[in-house]
Image (cartoon, rainbow, N blue to C red):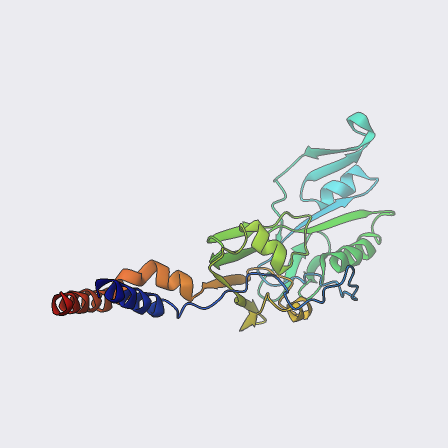
Length: 262
């Protein structure tokens, strides 16, 4: 009789824990099982927004012109080793902050609207304008403050992207933050984005290949990515608090049944 009682209580306990769902921890689990899958990809280039910080370097054959367009930084050809050499003559070029109107104040050229353009488009525009003053200019434009925030089941951190990388997708961003833990809801990843005075929130399913075509798959400046914990994590971290009354009742019932069948 005691053995039957123990089996009954064991079944009751495991039944109480059976509500934890089975997790799908496979990325894009709906992909066809083929050796090779080919799809057309549209490259998503970052566009410049107010608050961005641009690094702009202008190199011309004329040293005085270099100083004029680089805020006192002279860039010379033919330094040691035959490459480029930089010589500081004034204040350090700390970058160009895009104001709320989407413009920057560039030496000689004045205000330039850059909002909505890619760094390549800004480079091409500057090359045309500088060409009015000097022949064969070389212009380099980079985004200095591309960053995004990871939260939840990735380990919270702010990720600063190197200036030479302007294309970071969600998978790369998650890898930079250490990946999703086994308790993360891969089918409900929240991406929060602010653009043109509007905040949008998109939920992406990393179990589905359809996410690859989402406009939120490629991250933008100041995006926030939140990976929500699943029921197993929530139950595991708060089991005692949430089930204390049930546990006390279960022990009391077991004691009463034990005394009855003793």
